[in-house]
Image (cartoon, rainbow, N blue to C red; front, side, top):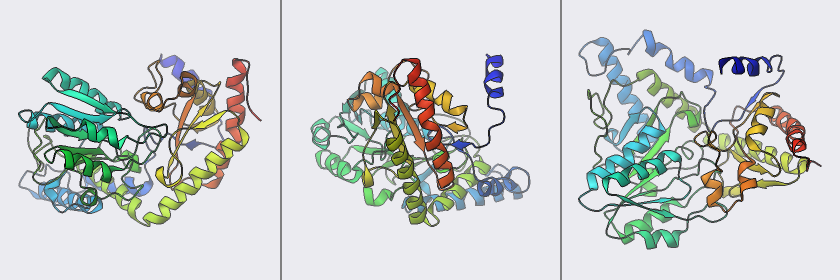
Length: 407
């Protein structure tokens, strides 16, 4: 296996231009974020924040200040409402399992959509072993949840609803505020969770304005370090711990807080919200330039998700018909363009993306999907380079099956 990887890496030698667009699965961390983190490894605040000495007090102060900043970015009032976790997956697990276990005497029904991320789908499947049942709300061809079906699914047994604010794969911005109102009107005691990892730092998102009880955010989705995320838990909402161990400054996630990663997450947040409107506008222009270029130069291409203002500004998800997506990611990688075929959660499984299937896409459309995400750091030259190399890459892969479709 390692020899095969070495051969693949050798084939990439001499690349003149590289463009990383696989922001769904990892990020290139900006220098400003790395510089902010470095002192916390060996110069200050490197102690355990629960211990009574200078490095410990420095760590405590740093984490409290970081928590306050995160609360401000999310629009909540209390430091107690922010819980740092090792990432989005852990935050979603804590939200779903912690809520389900705390509410088990009030009901056993959980409602999600058909297009939730794998770390939500799998947790609900796991909870079935504890007697919980799951109702999945369908979506339309652009990925929007059916609000009427959502209302019909809520009953007195419904203890939790989990709907992503933005779909991780196709970028559709869901009507979360309307969904919350529908759920609370049918059952005021139902807890509403949203995975906001693809909304935070990219669209206007305020937990108080939306009325959500729980919200997940992720560091690497906003160009921060991997290995850190957070769960907002509205004051008064009871969530049980799902792990046991030494309790630090946070009651819901045991263990010693990772101060450098928390600092990096907050710095990435500061950069995302600094000149927020300009950042969003820039990403949208680059995203549209990329999509327009692809659709002008390659035929038999389908846009996955919604258009315009109902699509998050960084997401470009397209399906190339007569072209296998995984093969195309490899072909593009050899040119220095790095994308993903669907999401990393499913790309090693020989099954079409559950998100695209829920949209009604057929096997060919689902397997030919490519996901690209732009950032404020990309340039027009980067995007033009991608537009230049995609047609020939698609032509080569389609040529293997005897059909190009490239104009």
